[in-house]
Length: 291
Image (cartoon, rainbow, N blue to C red; front, side):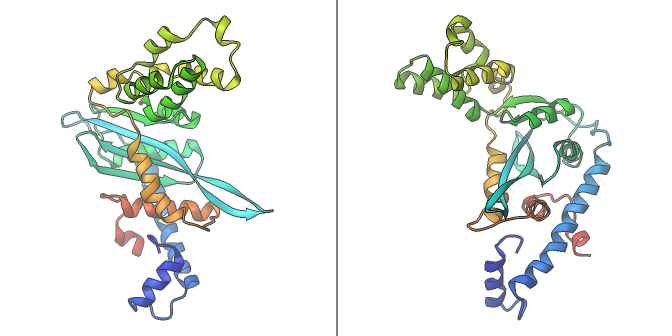
């Protein structure tokens, strides 16, 4: 039931005669305390680890921390299902992207920042590692990276949508936009240079519609996080594909199936359990949770 819906888990357990007579409700009662233990043990571990120093031995490596939020449907209230945001993080080495450490929880941004600090220690990061953060432009993620002193790269796919809005406003043809966007996605274009070359004087852009001005402000305020040629030259990724993949395979696979609704506490427990199950190096041992 940590991998399948309770309905499907009930079918499988009956087919394999694993838990004779176990109902969906019974599986749910078994899973909830297990998931709660996983969430609680993970939180305690990271709370202790966050204040430990980074390792000071070994050669430096390029390390990427990708952070994002994904929403699942909450319980219906007055005919409305509010979204519940699951905050997630992935730490991986550029030289070995398959060696990933996952974290997922439902909590305040300040608490999640401390959890990421603990995850960095548990993932074995060193003082001489080059650590960069990759994400979209969410304010809470920007604050997280600033709090941890991590250089922030803005996801190239996210920023390219704002670029396309500006190019349309400037009257560029579809062929021009496609060519420029492809170069942008390949990391061949630095935002500051592009803005300097193509954005007109304020007397012109102040007359643009609100979406166009919003796109311009977005890129101008974050242009230092979009020096993509420099990042590529340093061997760093510019797209947050790891955390997007986590949303799909770790969170979405179990928690965004048709008809699913979650309480805030239930979403946090299951997200923590999914991150634990899908990590090659789980933060908490199986025996700790089992006992």
